[in-house]
Image (cartoon, rainbow, N blue to C red; front, top):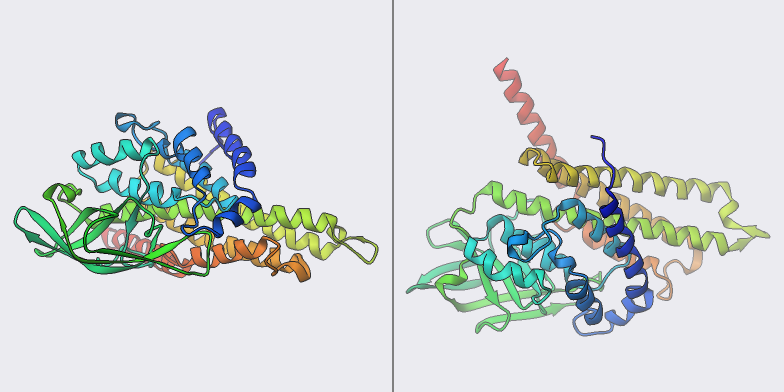
Length: 384
């Protein structure tokens, strides 16, 4: 595949990079860490409202800009580079994603315009972290014309601060349903949890006899496995783009530091061993970038859903490993100060660790890809 950014896409990347370099610098991130929600409210207001980033991939019919995966990947890469403390991933990569893939027309008309306008902070509450959305941790039972939800969900991103939680629940007839649960619903308990990565807050969510109206079930009545897989693949691809940005920043920080740090009378950037390690970081980053943008372009071109899903999984697997590698190299090459609170490498290392376990580990994705390819070969062999 031959791929290059258009002039408009380059402008999106450059403007996002310039904005976040100023609005989400190290000082801003550290201020956000000291707040109860972990969210930089001013940054979120600018991103979601003034810049209309939440509207990027939402259809024009629902108040969005009607752009694609590539444009979202461009934004996510720059947000990952600056550890932007805003609920963009939970609202756009999760909530808007599931609405566009599985929401009914009425639900899309109700919720997507508010997300596009930056008026709503939402999230998707999932049962687990592994590949596959898994068995829902919530049960939904009919009560008259409405529903009653009961269950427990752990580690919901921005779960304590979201205005609405989209919850995948097991129905009493054995199928799955998707529900919109207001953040102030009676019977809903949200408990923020202290985690390894303080730049992305999560919460445990408990639903005890939460009563919802019939209209609060927002799926189209046909939540099939392929739909859930498409939702997961899209979210994994955007998480990979965020990880790519984090890896790039680890390299940039390391290059800047080694160009200033002197040892034995010369800058350590001149040492061959240091050059080799930085070069390996760059190789990992560029290989990952090719995978991610190739998968995004394939998705925007209307490629086969199975191929897009496997490409997104491969990108997530590679991005998790590249980010972890670059984060640990940044700490090592910063020497004695690399692990201290005053320097930033440890923030990226923690984000890399947390993200590597989210939406499927590298091993889980590779197992899924191998199984799909082996099944395909078996079918071809049988047909021949």
